[in-house]
Length: 419
Image (cartoon, rainbow, N blue to C red; front, side):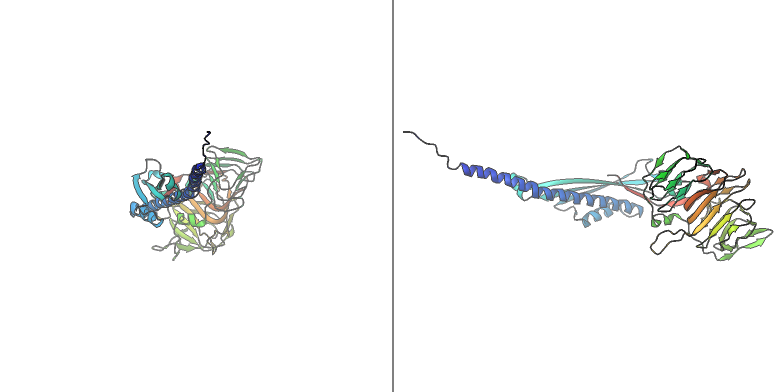
């Protein structure tokens, strides 16, 4: 008698394996998606918490409390489904600007995700661990705009234009153009030679046939600055509640006043002090001289042009460390529209002549500044902060910027995310 083996019941076994496979795919798709989503959310929360701790240090408040509070606001409160660890250490020596003290804040979030389909496979819970590290460096006094000697703040177009038949010899600081245009820094003349430590632009640079000597290299990937980002770097605008007076051939500030008003006209020599310029002379016929002086320009449409032949500007900025305008030779009030954007409404032809010196920062963020060479042995030791900067005349422009003789700003805390 022949026995025939029954195959009944095999379908049930195959179906069981198929169900396990289907559950596995469901676990991968659904539970896996939830796990990845939670990890992204946890990383964002850790980044935010690390930044919160860094900003807390800049405000002299408790770092750990600030970081944990931010993590809690993002649903990671250190309860049953998450652990939050905040660690604060001193930043390594030399990593913060000017060797200021800094703090490195590390935030670790362990997040526990309850599974649904993966339970069938023996996984009731999956742990995500994310890490964020921030650094907060203390505020300090230093040269604004990274110590660049030529600073153009125009957001578009040619910010620095070296066209003409003059050479530029710049030492002590580089060129920065805030323009996002392809020709943010520009030169096309066969006769122009530019020697500078560095060139930094937001957009691009176009040097044409110019002879370039950039000892420290070029960077065309800078972050564009808005007016709100650098407005705090400028000094306070004075009240100008005094009146300057002439005595023994020299103009003097009115004692005890926050700036003394005076109109520019002809040859004028100034005693040490803060003078508020009330007019817009345009073409200037005369020589402006002074020692330990700051000229604050009040006019929103200020224009001044020196044409050489004895008509020039030769003066030095205050050197007293207790003077809030120390290192500032000329401060032209910035003009801003209702949306907080910098305007371009002013013009300055900056020309030294003869053997006298120009020492001190020119802060003219709304002005086109045309620079002329010095026909004598006088020095131009200045940081030029303008809307646009270009060249004029035929004499070479020699700018020997020295930080110690120019404006030193109270620079804000530097906060960055390291990981």
